[in-house]
Amino acid sequence: MYCVRNITEDLYWVGANDHRTYLFENIHPIPRGVSYNSYLLLDESTVLFDTVDWSVSRQLIENMHHVLDGRDLDYLLINHMEPDHAATIEEVLIRWPGCKVISTEKAFMLMRQFGFSVDEHEQIIVKEGDTYTFGKHTVTFVEAPMVHWPEAMVTLDVTNGVLFSADAFGSFGALDGKMFNDDVNFERDWLPDARRYLTNIVGKYGPHIQLLLKKASTVLDKIKIVCPLHGPVWRSDLMWFIEKYDKWSRYEPEEDGVMIAYASIYGNTEAAAQALASKLCEKGMTNVWVYDVSTTHVSELISESFRLSHIVLASVTYNLGIFPVMLEYLEHMKALNLQNRTMAIVENGSWAVKSGDLMQDFIDTNLKNMTVLNERLSMASALDSSQKPELEMLADAIIESMGKTE
Ligand code: FEO
Image 1 (tube, rainbow, N blue to C red):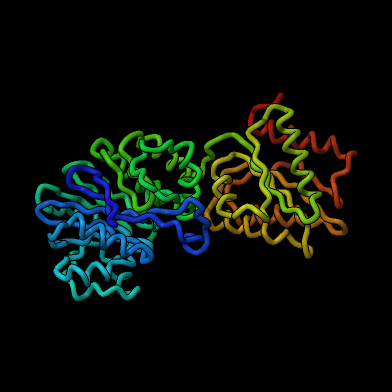
Image 2 (cartoon, rainbow, N blue to C red):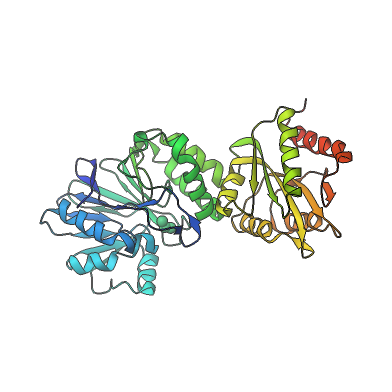
């Protein structure tokens, strides 16, 4: 059965939802699923904007047949050719062999690398500032390198203000019928997955997102609807979402708050993390979030690290090193360029307490613009009640560094 939605009078969502994939990119859990958005324009020419992941290709084809209703497909416009959107290119071209393909030179190169058979079809190579007319609708192209791959572009329909934004403004989460941002309570139900998507997938490329936002700011008044490749279509409150993107891509925290990430074997480092959380709340800082790095997926840890201003790393020493899952979390921070946070260190070890120095060294060597508080909490096997003053000092230092001391 087809499943399509009108976006405007002549533009249709013909994508698909996926609740079967457990790991997006084979690394990030997506318990709420994901949507692969593809859009079909019926103008004097017909135009498909991007395809879908191979896993939902049959749904795309069925949707296209329904909307085309016997018309031919004239153009396939590829904004982003990562296979979660491009894997069905070949199938579309087999079924509509007269279709011309519009994309960037780099995208065509990557299509060949991936073995998509585009060379038997007419190729229209476009670059920033070019325009193309399909009848009533004229589009213009804006290059968006590294958002999220080097070949990416976004396409603005200057006739009606629809921006096909590729990976930008996307989110994890299947649509399940709810197509627009105002069909859902986005802040409550979608923001965590939108943040997790952006920070983990494109977090490394903050400056490139900033560049795209700068380009978008020059045509903001012309943008009426944003059609991303994942998640809801935006038709209101776009500035609210742009401000989130601006913060994430400048590596600025959204909120003053403390994330305590602990690595604990027998529960003693965990107990110290809980004691610190309790002390912070007692002193009035209640925006406190405690995570076990062993049981919290690293994509969640990264997402929360982008949200909050303060990160406490509490790790046991393991094989004279940092506990492996804590090290993995730190490696992801490095890979995704996280910066501008205040950090604190809690260390544990029964005969050689090494994890604190090693975490400090990792931060100093690999992370940018991090402030590590001097008040390190160090324990031998477990936090002793005699260390209550040290716990107080650490909690005070965290709060003072937020300018909220009591
Ligand atoms: Fe959803 Fe970069 O692809």
